[in-house]
Amino acid sequence: MTRPDPTTLLLARAFPEAPELAATQRLDRFLQHYWRQRWLLLPGALADDPDLPDLLDGDELAGLACEEDADARIVFTKGQHFHQETGPFDPQRFAALGDADWTLLVNGVDLALPGFEPLLRLLRFVPDWRLDDVMVSFAAPGGSVGPHFDHYDVFLIQAQGRRRWELGDRCDGPRYDRTSDEGLDLVSNFDPAHVVHCEPGDVLYVPPGLVHHGIAETPCLTLSLGLRAPSTSDLLAAWTHACMEPSGELPLELDPPLPADPGTLAPETIELARRALRDALLRNLDDADPTRFTHWLGCALTQPGRDAGPELPEPMAAEALAARLAAGALLERSPGARLLRHDDGQIRSLFVGGQAFPTDGASDRALGQLVDGSVIGSGELDTAADYALAAELYNAGWLYLVDPGEEGA
Ligand code: SIN
Ligand code: CO
Image 1 (cartoon, helix red, strand yellow):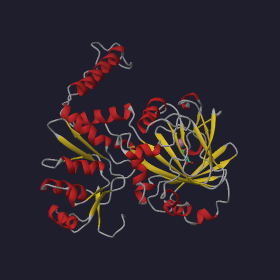
Image 2 (cartoon, rainbow, N blue to C red):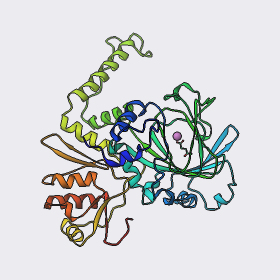
Image 3 (cartoon, rainbow, N blue to C red):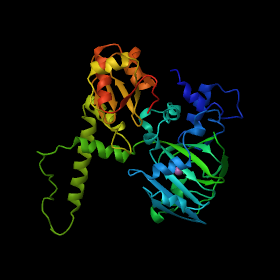
């Protein structure tokens, strides 16, 4: 399998002690020894990225935090104590924050501002459905969100300023006590095993469950690229829900033969319930039609994360879309769009935003470009079915049109 180039870029300066490693060996080493196990500093990974310094600044972030639908919070540090206020905020709030000991965090910044797609594409060594969102923090010196661990893999990109990171060892979160004061889920008595400093262009990988604590040493802007994955219980609950018959089921037979004491939960009832549920769970999984299960999983994994989904455009027919593309317009994927394709040799499916789109007659080239390419022009679409599929995705808001000369919006 050929590895996508962007990946090799992210890891290009990893393992400075082993400069002889080829790009694929770097990736293999990362996946084998660090991925989901240990933190890794990628020094200067994005130091040459011309767009990173200008992506956004603290003022723009504050502007986003004032928008009505902002998922934003400000965390204040006072010694060993932390408390937070949740947004959206009044613009006046920022004038009163002072010069130290606070952090503004905004989730889903990639959905609100353009320009984050190239960063997200650096992570294509994991499946696209794992991309969650870009959270951005701006911190005054001393600002921190407290020692904690996340349930996600996260790549922390230092965009501006300098941040000190205190890190635990090998996914050690569960061994600490948790404190959940003021809605913050922190660990107490954190004794860091490692300390690193991040400067602009450095990237720090932190696996799920590893305790980390980032303290701004100067005003600093940090981007968190989160990689979501459902827990077993999330997925099991969703599949069980999908298998439920809405009606027509008879009540479970849970009565012991002779209820000795009607006010007691009888051991027989407990055993009957356990057996009935286990049989139902196994039946729902083992007897599931493979096509139905695949369809369900493709939809489940591409569900939009934090947002309900993209804004819907004025609907456009495939012919009108073809005319726009022929005139030089390009289609781009909307921020937050996660596309997955699947081919079992008989059925080709395309899952986008929790929905399956029909691919009958669409060319492999068009499907490949929709999923892997950065833009789609008339050169990438061949058949009428390609245009019909592109129009469906456009009408569902997962693709948008950029006219010639117009910047992506
Ligand atoms: C931050 O950006 O301040 C915190 C990010 C994190 O620790 O996950
Ligand atoms: Co974190």
